[in-house]
Length: 110
Image (cartoon, rainbow, N blue to C red; front, side, top):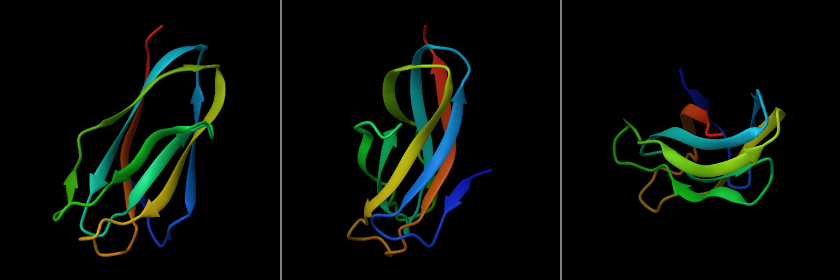
């Protein structure tokens, strides 16, 4: 399955909540789809600084991209959220600003 975000424009945000089971250090990564009509996005964890900044999801054909690492984070147990914000489009893209999120991985390190 894929979270497919359509009908958005630059400046629009989508929030994806998740729950951390225990306090600790976690590695976070996201796998996106890339396509001719996908936008450029920034991703923030709990509205902190950008964990991923200005990631282009453009590709001339639809494909599953390799996972992008968002680094290691000290997280308390409980609710958290990722904020995906559309910031533009690649010059060669069809300007539909779509986003496809294939997977979010949260790996406890310690």
